[in-house]
Length: 309
Image 1 (cartoon, rainbow, N blue to C red):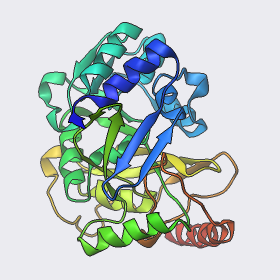
Image 2: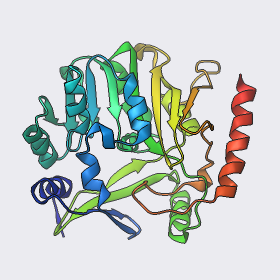
Image 3: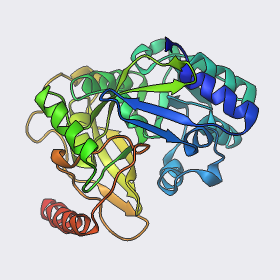
Image 4: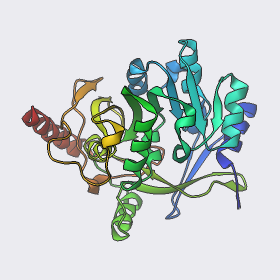
């Protein structure tokens, strides 16, 4: 197995052949192969997840799309006459974006974002790319970086996964493995594979809304709105809670961040607060959920959010 741009080669093959698999490997040896993955990175707006389409209504101004993949976000918002900068660490992905008509596609990772990119009104992290924050320690630093390249009224719009329960023993064992190593249960160690290529290993963080709110506050942001439907993926809008010059590492002082957000649901229900013990790997990895546990979590979450108001 050679280390290389497996993600980019997968995208290029899908564009060329119209078919293919996305193979994701977890560092415990668990593998998943999805036919939906490659097509999702190229999907037109009408085929985006419902929660992404709803959150997309909040996009405005100058846009930075992080982990842009095949450029679906840029292509949609270019049609709406917005200025979009798309960045990805995959040379192949950047090549595909340019071939598909993305006007400003750059080979750049989230760690490399700086003032040379200019100032943005909206940051987009669709496709479960909240996970690119990496881990609970790294995330506040990256969020402070995003503070420095955005206007005071800017938003971050992204998606992540919250699962109410899992009966899959391999996932449960992975949660325990992470805990024993001092890692967050939802901090995945992954790589993408394609034929004889594999990307370098990378950390990918899954968080339910309330845990995201806690971590975001350390970087100067708060969860302002959650979009959800009946599936395991939710969309979220983050807003600033202090100027970047005031941001500090570590815990947030008492009273510095609101602890409630608006809930936008396709089915009228509130999002569940997941405890850390109920983490499962990325949405691409298969899981099983328990409706009984889900209803119990939803009821308890509704009571907690009501009490905060």
